[in-house]
Length: 130
Image (cartoon, rainbow, N blue to C red; front, side, top):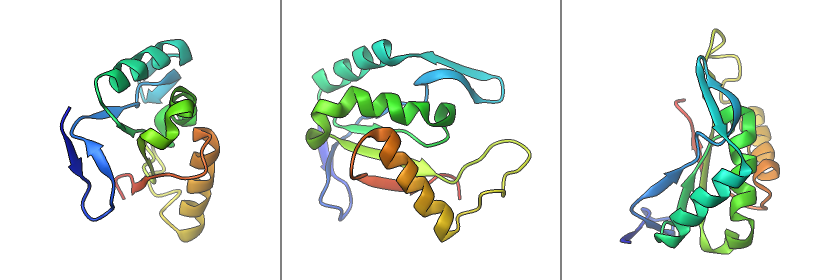
């Protein structure tokens, strides 16, 4: 696996990122449905780690936060060895601007993501399609 510095962050990440958008059970967006539970996610994350991937991406909106919860559990004993990126801000459906990106909203999103991921820090927090 090849690794690169992520800008000026000091983080060194694999050139391949593991996206966890499909983790969880239920509706992702509209008619798209996820069916990947914890056991299957654990196997997928294990294979990614074995391949040298250390950069994992998720978002608060993926299956209503289930993706973050499942990914956090799958990485719990490897937390110091991986880089986790998560996002907030994107809402699909009729109320695209309902949440906005206010300070309060972003702070609450960070707090919720920390809890769901089961960690005390997030390496990279992204505004999802602001």
